[in-house]
Image (spheres, rainbow, N blue to C red):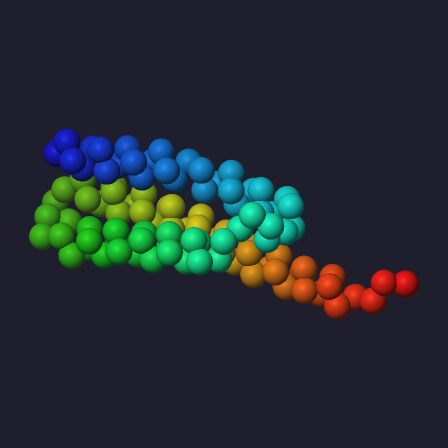
Length: 101
């Protein structure tokens, strides 16, 4: 039980940073300081965490539902940041192609 509480604490504390990161990406309209590989690896890590809870024998009857929900929330923010990355990358490439007059 202590291990699950600590896992939830880690996910919540780590997950607090994602909304701020997403807002920064939206406001800056830039990919500067962003790592596509990092975002993909974090999302893959969250997928593995969700899968571990889903395949747990105690998933239906335990706190694992709440842990799973936190994984989903964190995954959603990172995925939104990934989408924003591609939007910003597309915007940057259009700016680079625009001739200077």
